[in-house]
Amino acid sequence: MTTFLRGAALTTATTLGHADNSDLGPTEGSGFYRAWPEDLAAIQELGVTDVRITLDWARLQPKPGMLDDDWSEWFEHLLAAADAIGLRAWATLLDASTPRWFDNDGGFADDANFERWWPRWVGAAADRFGDHVGGWIPFVALPSAAWQQPWADTWNALRGDAPVVRSVDPTLIEPASLSADQQNATGLVTRIGDGPEHLGQLLRDAAEAADGPVIVSSLRDDADATSTDDLLTESIASAVATIDEAIVDGVDVPVVFIDPAIAPPRTAAPLLDADRQLSAAGSAFVPTS
Image 1 (cartoon, one colour):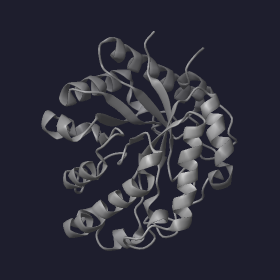
Image 2: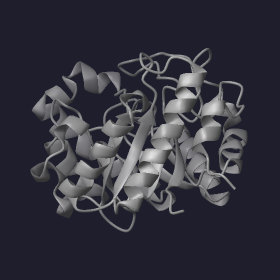
Image 3: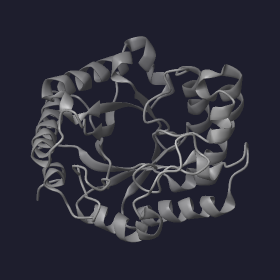
Image 4: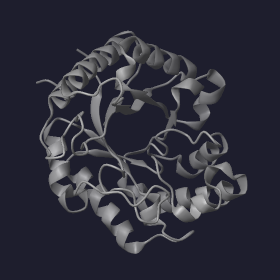
């Protein structure tokens, strides 16, 4: 049966934790800073082929316009190691937090601020890491405060050999917003607990609006709807079946990223738990032999 490639999201919050100098930090990480070689290997051994790795803006640009050399080298090693074991790395430039200096000046809500600093960050990331990535998912979802201009700046900086995915809030799906000339694929952020009918309709609507591939850039748990391991397992199994049905119906879904790859302690784990053990829900997501 035709199905999709399995991907896993390595977000800042669930790997390194938010940095001291970010608008959401500091928060505790998962030990990924030192355990990343073993963590990547564990993910690859499950049959996962793609990883979405957040290049943490706050760590990489602790000051406006300057890349931190130590963190740049760390992320280069991470991306190269993923490639070496057959994991295609998709780079994300913004998932939740921003540098505090950017937030203090108004963040994305201030036009002059984001028009000045966001393109410089994208350009610096493209120059430093572009040779190490298999694709770009720059935003998990475009900032609601100013989601058109940041995308235009991003597309202009990143378009090239590696595909660029335009991830959108599902409520904003409409033909005018998904122009195919400024993306290689459309990315959807969807919550597992919303149900199979909702997910199936989102996939079909996005495919029709964009007239191209639809990547699920974040398939994640809704704690209110799937607060137990059993419910999460059932919901993920249902989501996998729904995506496969959409593919049979002609929707091009190349890859789906379960989010997060490594769950925080004391939470239901969609793939690996905090001890790096495959969860029951993860067994429902990974490909069967």
